[in-house]
Length: 92
Image (cartoon, rainbow, N blue to C red; front, top):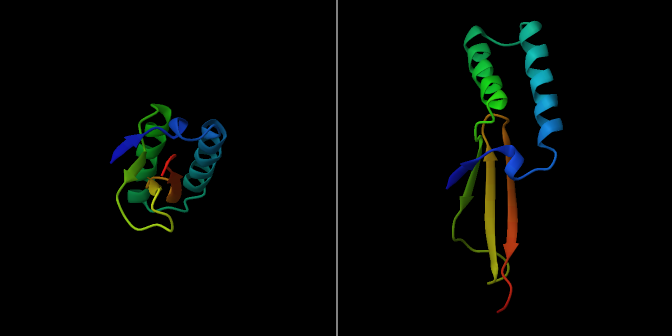
């Protein structure tokens, strides 16, 4: 398990973060969030600004459809995203 910045796994990092920041700021301005959640979201905005690693990469053994496959799960808890990728090894 490790944490990486979104830019390490997505070429769309800039536009994704721009949209996320706009959405968070609009929600805060419209008072859609509790004061506690606003503080948490401000921390998230600070992490985006500072390019803090926020995507958790997890590689764990498990069963897949082929013996030469591995599953990589990417979690971005701040953005509430979960992505699971199947990686195939070359060879046998």
